[in-house]
Length: 367
Image 1 (cartoon, one colour):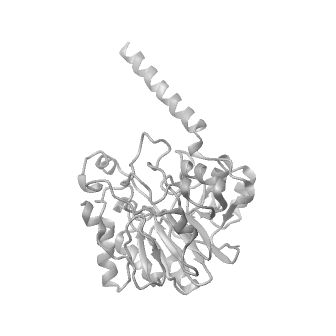
Image 2 (image 1 turned 30 degrees about the vertical axis):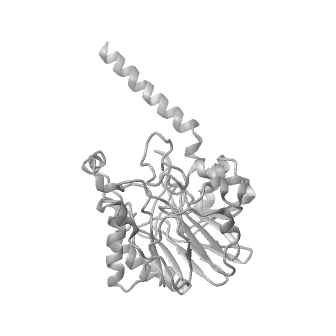
Image 3 (image 1 turned 30 degrees about the horizontal axis):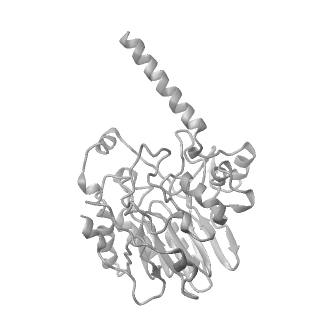
């Protein structure tokens, strides 16, 4: 009887998981046969999978898996991180001819440039997972501004389809107030399945360029991977982004390991006024797809950033290091490399080319 009950339980779990993965909208859409033929023409798609410029591997052994279940108070802040609040009127009445940036934690930003409002990887939900019942919860109880209070968004730029960058709930709340969505190849299928109008979806290959009323977006290489389910790994592309405004140049690294593409991008575009560089959620076991902090600083030098901001930290615990390890290590290395670093609080506006960049050690209040 015990064996029968156990068997019924296992079958029930399998059925439940299968139904959830096939019916839950969070997993997004998939490519058609015709789309896969087009992907093969991109130069970065082989045997039904997107590939990196250089060999890339990731290991996740049983010992590392067990470490995630061990409690370590250093992996998250000692208390809720208070966010600096912004008002929609501040966005509408932004400084004329100034580029301004507001961090939402992790890799999510509001970029105000050329009279446009642009959201970068707007994962604004509480948990980066397909279900709110499983996953690391956000360190902050509040956002700098709730989605409902945001004014019209001219563009949403997505680096790849992982849950901590592409959030179903956030997109559903945003979709009626966004003019255009820009993303690497294949990611658009998720948005189509969520009801985003086709004319708003723009999918780019590496080095593809597109203009939006005078502001130029370029999808550039990254060393990473993709996937929202068990069987769809590398089925959509990933990338970094170059944003060329009338007066300012911004680089957004997305996610990825250290590789020669950073120098290539720096040489091609002649450097950047600000580089937003991934720094967090790393481990030696997956160092090919997430940089170590010292590599992040070097990547900032490679892209010729005048100022660099470490991102991909400060919101979620997705690795085994302490939550402040990224910012502490990258700060030390940046000093060695004579690289200018900015460290705004979540919600603290940053105006480019100002004489008052935020550089406080605010995280020490939460250790």
